[in-house]
Structures are given as C-alpha cells and as structure tokens.
Length: 529
Image (cartoon, rainbow, N blue to C red; front, side, top):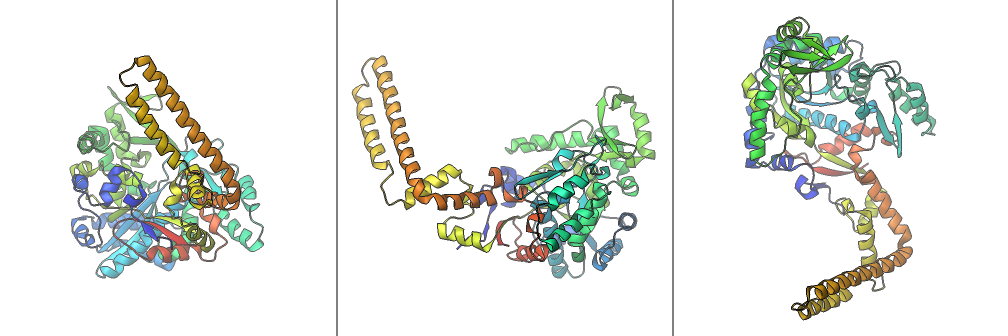
C-alpha cells in the first residue's frame, strides 16, 4: 500500500531554511512575524492594516483589468467585496508561462482556492479571496516560453520583441506551435478541447492569454487575477519607489537581514543590488536602473537623482520592482494575509522582514505550497507489487536495478562473503607489512586496490547477466522513475496539465484530492489520477 504523503524532512525536499521554516524551527523565528497556522489567521487579521481608499483603488483596477473577460459570478463578487474592510486575500503568484507551464503553477492556484474556502468556513465574519498575481513585468522569456508534453518540448518565440516585459509579448510562431501540439492528439473531441485552451494565445499577448486561460480553468472557484502592470496600482506603490531611488531602502535593510541569515547558517536567495527597480520604456521594454556616483543609469543614459525622482512622481507606472521588491508591491496593493509559494520563493521572502518593518508594511504569513505526485491506478498497483515507494524511486536507476536484481535473483550473485574475506586478508597483509619499507607498503596497497576493483567488476558482470531474466520488470521500474522523476527532476516541474486533458474534470478532481488531509504544514502528496 502506497504512502499517501511525505513530510519535507522525509523527502529531503527544498533548502535547509525552508525545511526549518515548515518545521517551526526557532532559528527561522527572527525572519517572520509568526509561523503559518489556521489559528494564526485571526492574529494576522488584527495585524493587517489596509485603508478604505486603497481598497477602492484595488477594486476598480481589477474591474478594469477584467473588463474584457467573462467572469464567473463568484469571481466578480470576490472583486466587489474587496471594498469591504473584513475581506482579505490569500495570494500566490507566478510568471506568465505558456499554457501555465509546469504543473506546480496549477498546484499553487488550487491551494489558495481550497485554503480560502477553508478560512471562509472557519472565520464566517470575514471573507477570503483567492488571488493570483501575474508576474507580467518579468523579462526572462526563456523560462516561460515552452511546455513539455509527452516527452516533447514545444516552444513559442518572441521575434522582434527582445527585452519586452513578458506580459506584452505575442507568440510570433503561434500557428506552428499550435499545429505541433494538436498533432499529438488523435481523438477529435480531445483535440477540440486542446484547441480551445490554445485559442487564448491566438493574437493575444501573454498577459491577456494567461488571464483568459486561468479564468477558464479556475473562474468557477472564484479566482481573482491581478496584473501589477497597472497605472493606478503603481501610484499606491509610488512612495516606496521614491524611497528606493532616494535612500536605497531595499539594499540597506536586506543587507542587515542577510547578515542575520548568515549568522543563523542560511544562504541568501536573491542577489541584492543598490537599486532594485527596472524602468519600462514605451510600456514594453524593461531596462535595469543602475545606481551610479552621480545618480542613475538606464540603458546607457545618465539621470540625476532629482530627474529620476521627478519621473517616478509623474509616471510611477514606468517603474517596475525586481523579484526582491515585488513582495513589497503585492503587500502594498492587496489586503493580503498569506502568501503561498514554492521553497525558492519563500526563502527570499525571509530576507525581507526587516525591510517590511522599516516601511511600516505588515509582513504576511508564509505558507510553503504542497507538492503532488500524479499516478494512475495501474502505476500505483505496479509500485505496490514491486514493493517500491515514491521515495524509493528517488535513487539512481543503476542502484535501483542493482538492488532489485540482488533481492529477487535465485542465484547467489552478491559478493558480500567474498568482500568480507578480502577485507580480512587486507587487514592481515597491512599488519604484516606495517614495519616494512614504505615502497613495499605502497606496492601492496596498490595491488589490493586493483584486486578489490576486480571483485566489483565480477559482481557487476554477474548482475548484468542476471538482469536479462528481469528485463521486463527493469523497464517497468525505469518507466515509473521517469514518470515521477523525469530527467532526474521532479514531475511537477516538468509535466504540463495538457498531459491530463483526456480526463474529465481534471482540475475539479485535483482540487478534491488536494482538499484531503489539509494540514498547516506542507506535504508531498501522492494522488491517483
């Protein structure tokens, strides 16, 4: 019987600081307000300060952003109630990956939805809105321009759109990629479904396409989708933009946090710059703002501090936070209580507590997202019959097959007894030549190493010969490993949801599975799909 879930410690998952955080270790306490728990939400509500004026700006911005989308009644209602002082967001965010990218981006959204639902039941006097932040101002196109589907890679291009922020990019080879993806599906009904998903990208930039697709997938659950590339939201962020340009507020405060993190034995997650802002030219092209002795430099053009401060005052929408400052932006414009993210994301949030305090912002509760492994009933049955767990298959495939053959062979192919006798001989010879000439000692040591190598080669040959009798089973083990750990990675970071499009109500089914055994601490869960 397969184990249904694993802790991060059991799985050896993520970095040490994240494992310590999810384990409520005291060593991480200085870098947060409080550890995440369902009960701690009540305290976080008391801590969170968010003005009525900002709520109105947020609501109107969201209504404008979603004006061309047919929102579900629940999503529209969730936008409207953000104006109420007892309404809060449960947030995650992600880059604008083509067709949502790897599975874990879907998992993040499912988790904020089910946690918002859970909190709405636990705290009926408050309302909780699942909110997805589109990282539309990123420009790492190579990270988001492809999906892996049935062991093939499909990649969109951004011809003549170099250095564009991702939200403004329109796939220049969309028709070609659409044809290639559709050719992977033979069933006409399924092909029609895939074509509908792809249609969101037809002549649309990645921001509009992502919003439209996510609304189709998650709108019925009330998901609210927000784009930070927004003039009115940027105005709310303008005071912090000013402090970054004027006083290097991020660098000064995060440097202090980094010192404390290093003292606690943790490494920094995000490279820290003197200025952590970008400048967006013509609403499309992003350039780094570099601090200089005399002011700033943008795309080889110099600006005095006063010039850039004036620009920021008039056109805050032209200034974009980098990954380290984005949490400040999110928490400025959202009445947010919890941020859900992967281990890498959460680790760099832990560099920001001092900065939040300095700026008078409420630091949110942090929840590392759960991870899921999706397997069919047959694959789970096969694992059980082989007496393997999902965790066992993390091993190197050669070690797996070697161990399997040794355990199941009817012949004695192991060299345990021989190696034991050899080690005894090795000890005796070492004692015999201990007082002899150093040259003799080295000669004998060298010969013993050669002999031990020969014993290992003999064992390897015996195992290789025995493998022939288990060829079918070894191939099954390899396929199972490739399913869970493709290319020695992890399934959720490789597969795309289209791989499961043949299943009716895949998202609903995944959500229902994710709702089971919902705990405050993140888990790696195994689902039958």
